[in-house]
Amino acid sequence: MREAPTKPAGRLLRGPPAYEPLTPWRAGPALAASVAIVGLAFLAAWLAPRVLHLGGGATAMPNPVHPEIPASSLWVVAIFQIVAVALTLLASVAFGGRLRDVLALRRAAGGWRAYAGAILAMVALQVVAGAVTYSLIEHDMLADLRPFVGLVSGPYWPLAAAVLGIGAPLSEELLFRGFLLGALAKSPLGFWGAALISTLLWTGLHAGYSLVGLAEVFAIGLLLSWLLWRTGSLWVTIFCHGLYNSLVAVALRLADLQV
Image (cartoon, rainbow, N blue to C red; front, top):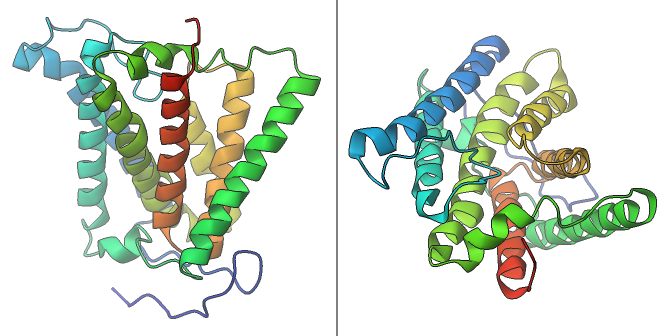
C-alpha cells in the first residue's frame, strides 16, 4: 500500500483539491460490502433486544437516523452504529489497506482554517436552505425534527446526544464518505460521480423524512463531499456532521416544541 502523497496545504476555496482515494477496494465489491455492512448492522440492532432480553424485547425495527422509537430503546440504535463502525474498520483493512489512507483519516489541508471554513460553509447552506424552504415551499420546517424532541428532552437525553452527535457522524461518515466514496472515486465515475452515488445512498438511510427534509440531507451530503475533496480529510466531515447534529439536539432540548 503506497503512502499518501504530500500535497500543498491550500485554503478551502483556493489551491488544488487535497483529496486522493487510496484504497485497495474496487467499486463493485466496495458497494456490495457497504450494503452488507448496513444489513448486518440492522440485523444486530434487531437481534440485540431478543438475545440479551433487554428493554422487554423491542419488536419494531429501529431506523438508526430517524429514530421514531421509545427513548428506552435508544441503545438499540447505538448498537447499529457500533456494529457499522466496527465492520467498516474491518473492511478497510481487509486487503492490506491502512485506515489512515483508506478512510482519508489524515490531517486537513489548511489546518484549523479548514475547520473554520467548513463551519461557515455549513452555516451558509443552512441559511440558504432555510430561506428557500420558508419562502418557496409550504412545509412545516419542524416536521422532521419533532420525532427527536422526546429523545433529547427525556431521561435518556445523554444517550440520545451520544447517538446523534457521536454515533451518527462516525458510522455514516466512515462508511459512506470514507470507505465507499474512496472506492467509487477510483473508478471511471471520478470523485463527483462517487459523491453523487454515496450521497444518494446516505440520503436513503434517512427514509422517513419529508421530501423537503431528504432534499436538505442530500444537499448537506454534497457539501460534506466537497469539504472532503478540498481538505483531503474525513475528520473535517465527521466534525461538521457531529457539530450540526449536536447543535440540533441542543436546540430541540432548549426549545419548547410541541410534538
